Amino acid sequence: MVVAMVCGGLVVTLTARADEPVRPYPDPGYYRMGVYAGGPGEYFDYNLAKMSLGDTFPKKRQWWASLKQSNRAARRHDVYTVYVGVRGGQDFETCRRRLDAWLQPEPDAPTYPELLPAICLEEENVVSRTKLLDRLARYVRGKYKVPVFQWYSDPFGPNPSLTADGWIWDSYGWSPEHFRRHVMRFVATGKPVICVPWASDPHWPQWTQYPTAAELINREWHQFRTCLEFNVSTAPFCVAGPGAVNPWLSSSSPDMRVLRDALRSKRREMRALRPGDLPLVTANFSAAARAIPVGGDPDEPSRYVEDFSGVQWIDD
Image 1 (cartoon, rainbow, N blue to C red):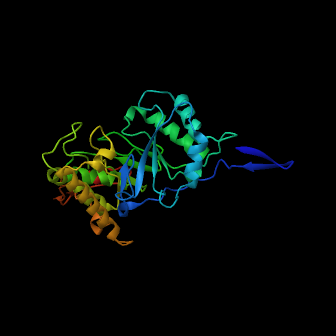
Image 2: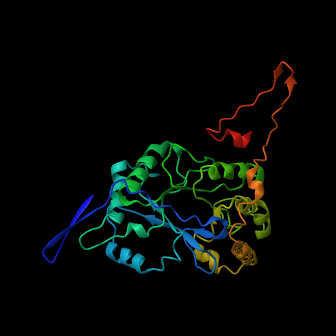
Image 3: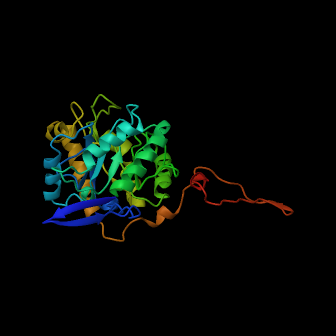
């Protein structure tokens, strides 16, 4: 891409190289806790910010100016989850146009995509939209050099054929054994991954309700232990009331006070960890759910071959 600028009669040409590599996302690991959508720094270190994009981007100049003036160090792990119509059945051109409406500079509205740590193309996507997700990811990476996360719907794991600089996922209600193998599939990609554990009001009616916060924690929060083991960052889903974080923060019910205190305790534990503490040594072992018999007759010994071309070894 070539851009010409006129400066006092002198034409200066700036060339953005098409082969310029996409910068890596600064993986926070288990040491930092994010939050789905957004929340205060008192509880969380970064946001999976949600943005619905249309064919135009109102107040574009102000939005980008505000981003430029923000504390970049404090927001260096944020991922902008953008909704452009993938789940709504829109085609590539519509989705591309909406991304450009946000990211592409205009004469009176400069943009700074280099300030975006990463974006995620919507959430809980169905596999039937993989080709569109891949094309959009390649477009954003090629034109704007922004890392792109992908997020499939449960129970799907990472897809090596889908362009992704990182992965986000949520797996609610899973057993510890099943969840651990699922985590391994993401970690095996070698890319940054973010898990979204359940930490919402135990009485919230839009999913499984628990009698108490303690029962929710006992059922769901084994996910934190596994993420610690593999050094995977977490960004809990924290909502209440109509499905927002503010009611989650302001509720004075005994269960919500217990839940918030427990989550803050988790964050303190994360921050007490030292660089190099994670992943744990146990992360090197798959803890298979089944046994593979070995032995056989002397002339026909058992033979097991694994070329590690996929993730079957995780289950074996």
